Image 1 (spheres, rainbow, N blue to C red):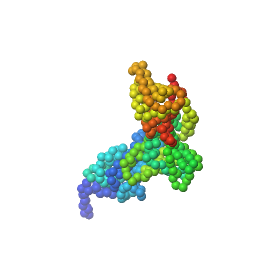
Image 2: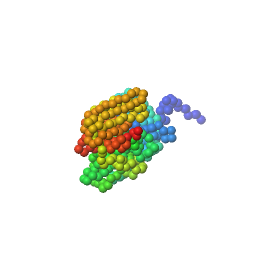
Image 3: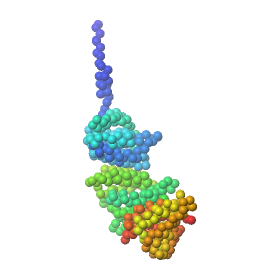
Image 4: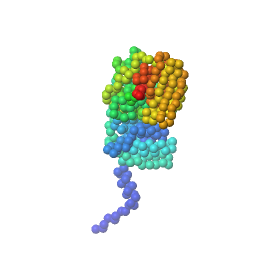
Length: 407
């Protein structure tokens, strides 16, 4: 019996044939480099290297009806962004967030074609081509859905400015968790609704009040408060800064408050964060109902005098003396045994008795810089009570308190 002759295929042909049989394109889409770069810049900042959970270093890329959704999380908060794209094959996958973001930012401003084959992400843009190894989306942490009837609208520019006016006062460490974040207090006032932002590290306090609206048909009968971690608030400001020069964006940002969570939604971006448990200090009891001395002084003159005097403050203590004299001047002094001493006088309007207080000049400058009027109002009882700063307006919406340095 004659043997059947064997057929020899070239090795490369066999390899390609087998590869074709087992290769499955799980996800395929195209988008502009600008849209992809902006989306990654929004979400990638919070992705951290984690030994226990390597997936936290990755960005989740998921195709949806509305476009392409990018998402990252550090388990304390999550950021998602939807960008326009042309979807050919639906799917989801995760790749290293920083690597992918850095790479896309260097691509030409042309169309980017991406497809997922097995556990590899292939990225093509003109002559640029790369393959990224990733992790399946099933390992990505589940992001909770925030559902609540407490929804508010606030002008995005007002909120960004208000946060910048208070966040520097947040406590730097978490030994007292309740002051390691920013207080968001929604408070009905007659027919109006206010949002009060407050932050303190127990040495100084900043408070800003702005107008908000209730989103939808709901109403707010009594005040509600949440403490939002400082990092989440900082991330919100950073994200809003990315949109600063973009036209045709919504005027308002939506805030949704739920049990133990808060959601900030702006355009196609969402930031959801846990809130800090505990009760925020009742700082209002620190603000006296009356004062012994009231001063009005030009902001720029005060800043210049404080900065000059601060050069002679003691290292670590940063102490300067404010002396309110009956001849309508504020005298600012400092003495350092190693460098010398300095004094400066600033012409001002003073009502009440002569007074004196010693404060940390850094804390004082922070408050003065965030007062928007050309003049600063300083209220004082004595040298052992809080020093209160406000703008000189009919209805000042910014309050700053500096605690004295006890001699």
